[in-house]
Length: 313
Image 1: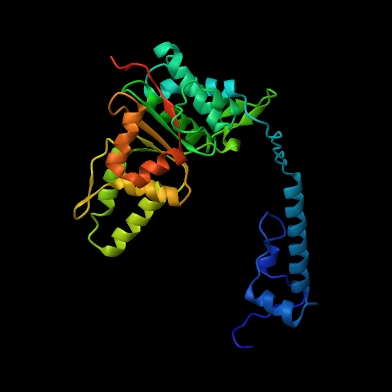
Image 2: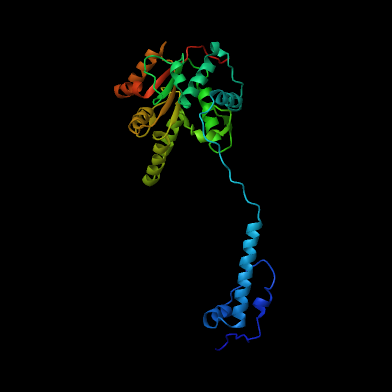
C-alpha cells in the first residue's frame, strides 16, 4: 500500500494510546477511518469505537449533572392597575425631563392628562369620563389622540415620558402591578410607540434625499417611509414644522398624515393653540394641510384640550 501506515493487530497506535483518558473525543485519523470501513473487527477499530462510546457516555453524564435552568413561568396576564402605571410614570418623569412631575400644576390638569392617557393606553372606559376631552370629536378608544394647549404646559414632557418608559420596558424587566396586585412585566402589555419631533422628521427627509446615487436615495427613503408612515407614532408640535426642501418645497407632514390614514396607522399628536381655542387651531390644520386632512381629523383623533397656562419660568 505504498507509504500508508499499516497497524499490526496488537498495536493501538499513538493516536489511541494517548486518548485513554481526557475530555476530548477520540481523533478519527485517516488510517482509523480506513479500518472502520474495510476491517471493522480490527483491534484498532474496536478500540476507537470503545473510546468513542465511552466519550459519548461521559459527555451525556456531564450534561445530566449540570444544574438545570428553572423554567420561568409568567403569571396569567391580567389588566394593569392604572395607579401602578401612574407611579412608574412619576418615578421616571424626572429622569426623562430633569425635573419632578408637578401633580398640582394648573389645578391638577397635568395629573388629569396623565390619567387620561393611562386610561387610553389601558383601553379603559374611564377614558370617556376625562374632563379634558373636547366635544368636537366623538371619543373612541380605537382612534388616536391629539393634545392641544398653550406652549409650555407640559404636553411634550408627558408624552415623551410615556414613550421612554414604554421603550425601556420593551427590552428591560420593568415591573407594574395588575388589578390583583400581582407583579407583571410592563412589556407584556405592548404599549410602546415611536416618538418624533416634526422638525426632526423634516431633517430626516431632507437628509435621505441628499444621496447622489439613486439606489442609495431610494433605500433611505424606504427606511424613512417605514419609520414614519407605519406603526403607532407620536408627532410632537404639529404645524410648527418648516416645509421640506426636495427640488422645491414639500409639506411633509401633510403627506405623512395622508399615508398613515391609508395604512390605518394609529397616530398621536401634540399642537399648540393657533388662535385662542381648539376650533381655531383645527381651522389652521385645514388651512395648512387642506380639506382632506381636515375632514379625516375628526375621524382619526380624540381631542384632548389643556386650558392651563404655561409652566415655563
